[in-house]
Image 1 (tube, rainbow, N blue to C red):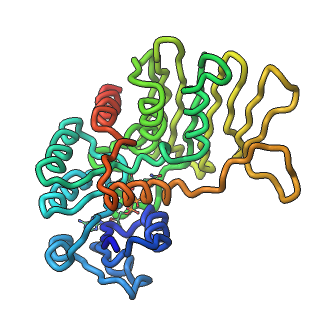
Image 2 (cartoon, helix red, strand yellow; image 1 turned 90 degrees about the horizontal axis):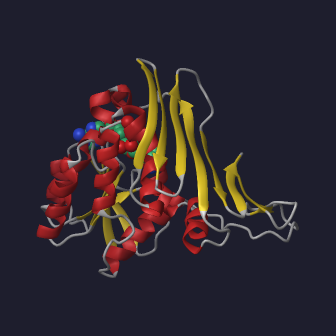
Length: 315
Ligand SMILES: NC(=O)c1ccc[n+]([C@@H]2O[C@H](COP(=O)([O-])OP(=O)(O)OC[C@H]3O[C@@H](n4cnc5c(N)ncnc54)[C@H](O)[C@@H]3O)[C@@H](O)[C@H]2O)c1
């Protein structure tokens, strides 16, 4: 049984904790947060207000970091120097040079490290990558990716609205789509970009050039309570692959009706349904299996993370 500790019991830990709890070969034994009230609902865990104390008292196999962005790299290094395998929420850091610092610490201490870039484990995005890789519908010609919402109002100490600590929309939101594209399509050039930033909102539009095709992305924290929206539309030679309004559809040149890959109501057959899946659980299970079976963490690579941070720091 692998022993797991989690630090940062805030918003996203609500997706990580149930995923660890559902695993049969890992046990979430300890939590750490500077706010004791965040741990009140987890009486069965050993709870710490101080990270050093948790490291001192626990013999962890895995540490899961759900802290504010600016703390990820330092906490990861500290834990890996104690021989603990580390998975951290995105991004690894706001600074490109931290990628080398973190990965060299992992190598020196013979432990595994992964950034939980969740779209790499998200079924709709996995299908898109497979269609691209297999050229099932011909070559990719163009793409559009959206990631929109209102500005975050929940974060501890309002750290998310502090550019020095969160990097705002490019590093918090847009990074999801850029990271997926670097993983799926390779390293792009920036065609053009536009940003509008005010104290209570941030919007970025970037067009990326991958050589044979371009992808336009829009990411926002609007000042209003805009509903969270994550969508894409990719144009291939013989199909348009779209994830819109929570449905993934493939419109092909061969039939009038689109192929709907999204789970349909019971009794409705004939679709190639996507499996119901929790991408946050998928990423943590993947990392746990790498640790358990001593396999290399191949799904998220250092040079891809470096490429993403370099682009974001130059936007
Ligand atoms: N993959 C995703 O879809 C996704 C979604 C949301 C957030 N995230 C990432 O998760 C991270 C956390 O975001 P969040 O929304 O949960 O933020 P949050 O502010 O809700 O939670 C952060 C928690 O860390 C605690 N904390 C702060 N400093 C600490 C310290 N020194 N020691 C121990 N605990 C400390 C805070 O008390 C808080 O509970 C961010 O890096 C963000 O980018 C990822």
